[in-house]
Length: 273
Picture (cartoon, rainbow, N blue to C red):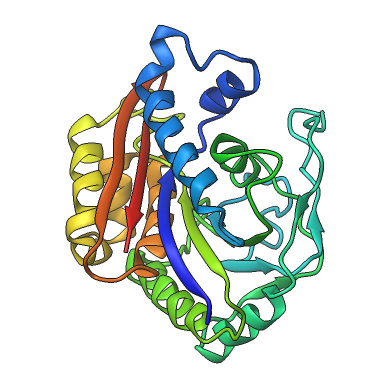
C-alpha cells in the first residue's frame, strides 16, 4: 500500500531559485531561507521518496487565458522545463510517475474534474521547488496545476478537499510507494497595484502556524480573504492546503521558516504525519 510520508510547503520565488542555481545560497541575505531548506533536503535524502505529487500553478507558460484549466494533472512519462524569458533552463526533463494515470482516474472518480495532460512543460512554479528540494531529480513526479491567476478560482476549501481525495487515492494504490506531497507558492507578495512590494509578515506567520495546527481555519477562508492578507500573487499559498489536506489532522512540524526577501515573504515547512 502506498503511503504519504511527508507534506512540504515551499515558495517558488524566482529570486530564491536564481540564488540556488547560481550558488548564492550561503550569502548572508539568503541564510534565513536556505539554512532551514538544507534541513528539508537532508530529510528527503534520508527518506528517499518514490513519488512526489507537486501542486503548483503555471505562470502562462503551458496554459494561457484562452484556455486556463481550474485543475489539471500531468500523466506524461516525463516533463520538459518550459521556456521562461525566452530561454530554456539548462536542466534535464523531470521524470513522470507510471502511477499517474491511476491516480488521475481515482481523483476523477472522487468528483474532481481534472484536465488530463499527456504533455505538460513545467515552469518555475513546479521545476523551481523541485530543484530547491533536490536535483536532478528528487523522484518521479505527478504534477497538479491549479488556477490561481484569474477568476474564477477554486476556493481554499476545495483545495483542502483535493488533498483529502489525494490521501485516499494514494492509500488505495497497490504498490508500496513512499509519497511526498508538495504545495508550492506564496507566501505574501503583490507585484502591482496599491499593495505592490508589501510583505505581510503577520499574515505569513499566522499562515505558517495554522497550516500545521489548524488547517481547517485556513480552508474556511475565502479567495478574497487570501487576496487581502497575502496579496494578489500571494493567492498561490492556497495550494498549500492541497498538501495539508493530504495529511492527517495531527502532524509534527519538523521544519518551518519565514524569510522576507525582496517583495516576497518566503515560506517553508516540512510536516510529518
